[in-house]
Length: 236
Image 1 (tube, helix red, strand yellow):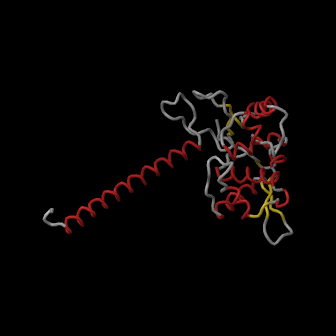
Image 2 (spheres, one colour):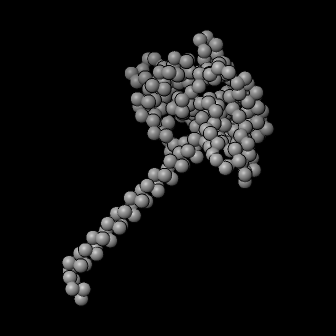
Image 3 (cartoon, rainbow, N blue to C red):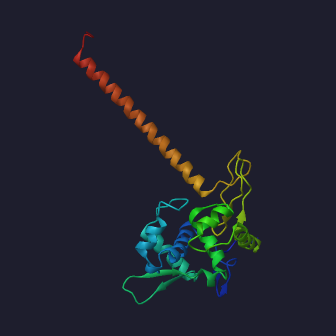
């Protein structure tokens, strides 16, 4: 099989025909879709507003730190693929997405993909709740219907993950950035998502900081012992 491509290839407008997105490109597209619905008065977005949306601490999984330069690079690539359009007639450049036309998808499917790009794997019930301001689904069955259509495409655009131990419902993940991360050893084949990778990195950083603090405590104890010895050299 050849390389998977997501987006627009030459003049073909179909979600299954475009190149694989980077994580930052996916975040940029998700933010543009979200903000079009949630802050229409300031949409299309300026670069500052777009970067702020990418680096938001809430409703994001994983939380990212995207620089202006990284966002501009992603925008340039997405513009070349006709996925993002730059608005004219303003002193400040503003950007909007072109996903319904570029991907030949209804608004409901675009909303689902945007929320998956912004928040990571979710159950159908979570997607219905998190999509509320982007598209109002009648019920969970309606969400599952659109997800099934996206999964049935060739190649599939989303995938239903195996239900993890202890979970009541299976979660869905988008494939716009490629296949989910490799499965963790001994987890029964459950994909290790970006959010888990970020959590592992954060845990490693916390442990390193803990080791550094413990070393400082030991140094302080040794210093206190030396000062005590100087003040009482005979051990009285």
